[in-house]
Amino acid sequence: MAKLVEAASGWARTIGSALDKAGAAMEVTRYTERLVPSTRFVAHNGKSPSAPLTFISPSSTLVGDVTVGKGSSVWYGSVVRGDVNPVKIGSNTHILENCVVHVAKIQGDFPTNIGSNTIIGTGSIIHAATLGSNVMIGDRCQVLDGAVVEDGAVLLSGAIASPGAVLKENKVYSGVPAKEVGPVSEELTQKLTQNCNHYSGMAGIHSAECGKDAPTVARDELVRVDKLHRDPKYFQPDYSGEPIKDADDILGMGTPGRIFNNSLKSPELRGKEKE
Image (cartoon, rainbow, N blue to C red; front, side, top):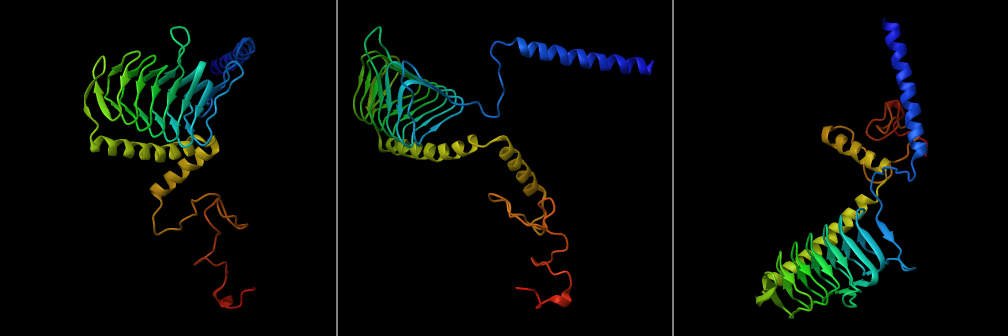
């Protein structure tokens, strides 16, 4: 009976493998799962996005005539689409998660221009609008076709700037539709500066992590576990960069018999080592 079950399981594995291969051969577009999904830079009408010296997250997409300035970042899940008109984003501007930046052509001919040192909060929509520099857009805001947000203006979370609206310089706006509620305080100005500096630093960290391949990630995990469990009084390996090459090293744990960082095998030879 046992032999019969063993034979049946072997046949099942063989048939399953054959079906898997047949299914893969029938796929029109094959999909290979990767460690980190690739950022989508998509050309449109012969124009490709340009984003040198920036952090564009692995799950974001830039389409067509899009220019992103130095030190800026586009975070996870966001889409910047410059298909029927251009999108220009200044330096040190940060578009946070799940935002949409688009342009218009049918109902008005509007590109999108976003200045420098600007923050666009999570889940916001910037559609065929102009944003100046030092602007703060809160979470889940909308700035719609032809609207202009002047330098230093602040749009509080959930507010909507209607098509063609003009948000004046250094003023705070809130509500639906957005209405002026007062001047920008020194506290808000400092918060914008702090946020820009914060996301600049975080962008560098995320860029480094997202650029790692599978072997590097695996090595990082081994190092983390090793540091967690290794007694600080015990031998400490070099965790930085490439490991030190040693012809006598065993499994990265050092050379057997080496004491006090020298390779003497007998105390009698101390002072008589070869140069």
